[in-house]
Image (cartoon, rainbow, N blue to C red; front, side):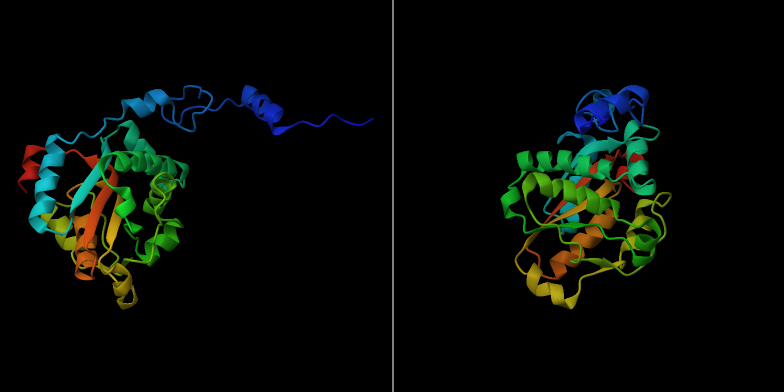
Length: 245
């Protein structure tokens, strides 16, 4: 007797009946179209607004340095919040689907706020080769890939290299962060012709004081880039004492 065949359309709901897909943050059952994180948890993450205090302080900081021409971000990173769980899963658990989704959301934001057609390349903040070998992937690259799906610009992971294996920035002060990454990046001589007169979008997962992304932007500008746009999936909210440090 010939056994009936089952298409994916039948098998998937059958599987979901016994193993329902749950939100990784709140464990609520996911609805059709939701992946890994439910809509309620996405909506609980605080969105960045252009007139926020943190945005104003970082804008002033970037303008004073002169290497970043524009910067954009979508969410705030809050301790013990949904975004912290999400980005930790992306960075340490290999759930790169979160990177792609964050990239798509950031790409939509960029498309509304700037002329994305002027961007020549999207460059992720690079990992040192030892860190890349240990982790197996660069979480910023997965965010870049998500952005590229929305704005249709190329991702170039070779523009900037991290040749100094810096210590974690997590518990450093603003000045210590700046010194830590000040000479950590380089642009290869073979890339300078590519960069001449170009507009580069540099992407990080979370911007805290901006030291890392400014260091990369400086290298790009010194190597010939005409304009650098900085973007991140999230910002760490600055307090008054951090703003003056």
